Length: 105
Image 1 (cartoon, rainbow, N blue to C red):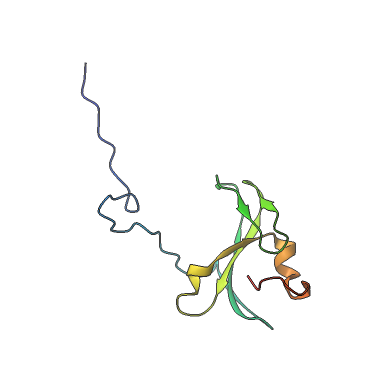
Image 2 (cartoon, rainbow, N blue to C red):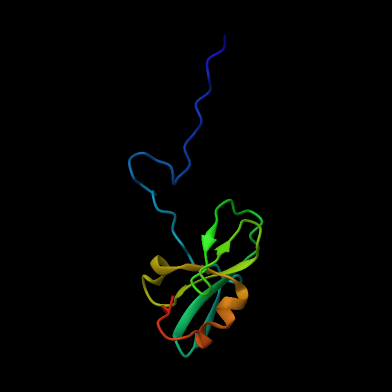
């Protein structure tokens, strides 16, 4: 029997905690900064083809299933990437028309 080959850990899988959180960097040419009445937002369009996770849209509170194109947005201030949210494209465009009692994001 031949010995098993050890799989090399990726930079975000290290047990010592280094790189445990995948950084969200703005990607030039992909991310856009949008200005609206609710502030400036970094917006990224996602095809959804490579996703394996289901997200919940803060606009309609419905699921965004894997394979569905959608928007990922976060505030355009320092540290705003910690507050990123996945939105249906239509919900993102209509977020200013949401009724009272709904969160901003």
